[in-house]
Length: 208
Figure 1 (cartoon, rainbow, N blue to C red):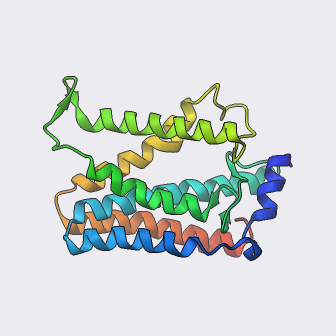
Figure 2: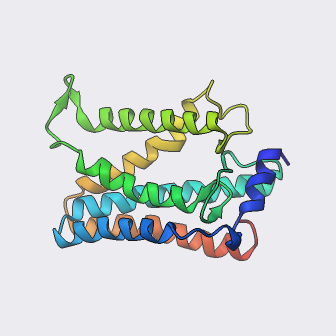
């Protein structure tokens, strides 16, 4: 087991790490989603939940990588936190991803708008993913987001881009653009349902 993995493991679901600032952070997330409900802005609401659900899926398989390799997760969260949910996910990161999808969806132009002559959805997926990877590299350099596998490093960020973020924004924008509220609800329900089932099964086995 790597030193970074050991540090993250020591934080994992340790209630003594709790800090009160997590409560107002939770209320901020609730307020953001409540505002979209009030406005009946279902495109943005479900898009936000889709991105959040996709991140949770990634966090689950990241924990499984650590369990089965017994060496390190693909990424680990080792910084100070109010609560460490999974080895690569603390409560602050969780709230951040809950807001990220809402913010990305709110900035979407109409589908027919083109950027440099290109369809805007693929361009914005690439731009948002690249920006997120840039932030992760900074966090890695600060030592609070650790990468212990040679194929997941700042010097080779392509997998971080393709696996770590592109699927998030693809799901976010796809759900946003679905024509019916029912379709959006089914898509998000499927994503979150898979997450919930994985957490119940793998959590009960002690793999998370």
